[in-house]
Image (cartoon, rainbow, N blue to C red; front, side, top):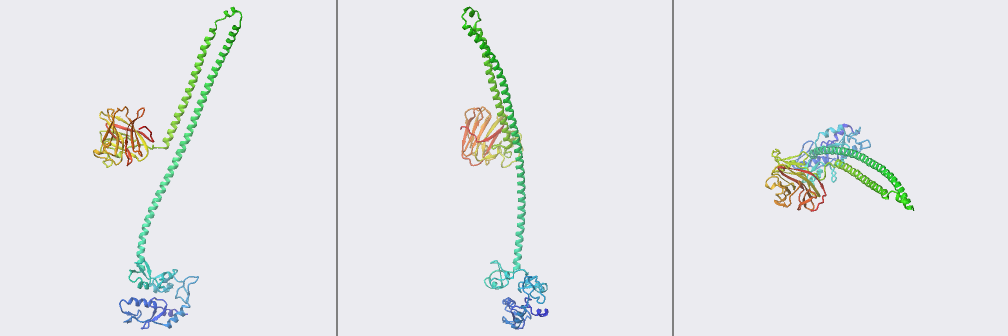
Length: 536
């Protein structure tokens, strides 16, 4: 076995590893062929060549001579070195006592232990990696040389021969430098991903909280509905028992009354039968004196006939009174059922489909809006609301919601408070002007309005065109009906029967909002609904 001193003499001074295909310069120093070729390649640009060991200069690139004797020694030496076995990767240079390698030198293509790693780790040319790394993956697939450069144009790792070949005119970088740039870019991406992940986690938590609240709300609503229907069933059962009990009571009372009447009539019937038999006996008598001595037969019939009429009349009155009681019970039952149904609707639907609520943000400063957003009242006292783009300059206000489809209606009632009072009710687009003369509802092409004057006169206005209603109005209650798809807006007077006043026809292009205007008066929104059906 070679000693450690002999092994030191067999190391290349360039790669600090055992000679591989050793060659000799004219000065007598030996190197690995690959190592000295790489050094001479770097000296080509200056045109001056020198020995890396003794620094002897050569005018022309020296010829490399194979050292056959040294080559034979290296082959015999390498034949005794340990190779990778099932126990792991061993140090290339620990021949006498093999030690597991901890690093691999890409420059020398050797596996090293801590002892032989010292010289390689001090040289920047010697790139180290984990001993478990497959070195074949770090070699050029074409030239089988270590990948030493990075081509930025082709984004590929290349060897020294590739750099002098197809990548000759490309921009080159050292792998370490390119790796640092890529790591910096990856760190930035990683930080952005962390931020996005945190944002995603926050959104997930927010959605989970919303889902939890939705589940709690649904559970609460389910419990409320269950309790409501339990109460409805209880009320219906109570109502059923009450009605059946009333029917039984009336039936029993009627039965007793009829039984008494039947008994009385049976007595009358017996009396009449007895009188009939007496009359028949008189008719069969042959003695005229006996017949003439009997009382007049008319006296026998008159009282009974009157009593019969009285009894029959009483029976008829009793029958009619019973019918009236039945109707009263049914009417009371129906009213109770209506109350229950109304309770169901109000319990399930908090706000109706066509509920109209006024938008305070659009109300003029001389308008007072009630807390339930249903009544608008003119007032001389300024409300000191902020001046915004959506607030009307004049005494006008529109509703919060609009209708962009379907058929809807809503009712209003006007109330006077001055001698010069008038009010307007209708619909408009939300994009109607809020300031200037053109903002008055009815006096632009974006609003349709009905105007109620103090002298019981009425008119409809659109696009500054007024149409007078010829008849005087007898009520302050009106209905506005919208058929959006048909392009019709109709006004009705809520009298008995309902009276049609006017219908506007247009092609609606925006949602329509309720619009109100008051001067020395107030308007109350009474309610609304869907799918109205009145004659035009």
